[in-house]
Structure formats: C-alpha cells, structure tokens
Amino acid sequence: MEDLTTGIPVGIHLETHTTQDGETSDYLLDVEGQMIQIGQTIYLRYQEPQNGDQQEAVPVTIKFLADGDVSLTRSGENRLRMHFSAGKRVAANYRTPYGVVPVETVTPSLKVSFHDRPFGGRLAVDYLLYAGEQLLGNYEIRLQFTV
Picture 1 (tube, one colour):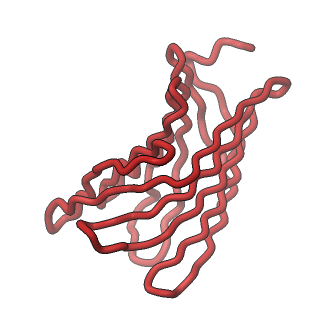
Picture 2: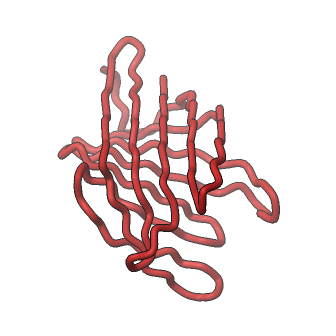
C-alpha cells in the first residue's frame, strides 16, 4: 500500500436510511473526499453539500480506529461527534447554537472492511440515537470509498 500519511483523494458513495417518528427518509451522496492514515487509524474527510437552510457545506470526518470502532464528526453550525462500538451505548454531545444536547448512540451492528488494489473500504453501521430515554431515530449508514 502507498504512503497515506499526506492524504490522498478518494471517491465516496454514501447512503443513509433514517426512521424518525414513524417517517422514513433516504439520503444518497457521491462526493470526492480525502483519506489520511496516521498509525493504525484511517481518517476519511469530505464536505456534505448544503441543503435546506444550511448556509455552507458541512465538513464530515469518519475515523476508523484500530479496534474496529468508528467515530463520525459533523462540524457545521451544529457540531456532532458520535462514536460507534458494536453492541454498546456511547454518550455524545450535539452542539447547537442554542446549547448542548446530550445524546447517546446504541450500535446493534457495525461492519468495517478494507481492500487493496485499489485501496478502499466499506462501512455498514446501524444505530439508534437517544436523548435520555427518548428514541430520536433509527439510522443505517452504508459507505464505500475507493482511492
């Protein structure tokens, strides 16, 4: 594998399926991003295009950890950093212009795989998002990236 410490361009295909309050929605994104490897950790960065009332694209970073866990950070006006660990409930903070909302993720399913020639990977994560004991939504993320 080539040196990935300086960052290289990648093609990203992202699909999300969301269920909130009995309503479902799907989101599809094909975008160019950047991948950086530092030690055993792989970082995937891209800009999520603006939609609706957003003024600017939202920077997103997905961090693949050596232990198989994954974290996702959205850094727009509302900042959210979630950590996914299979079978675990993990606390997070959702920062909005109106204050910080404590949330938690429960991850029933997390699958990560990587391949060479060309280097790329796949992420499949199913998670539940809670505020206290209230279920905010059920989410499925399917991501593929290739150098």
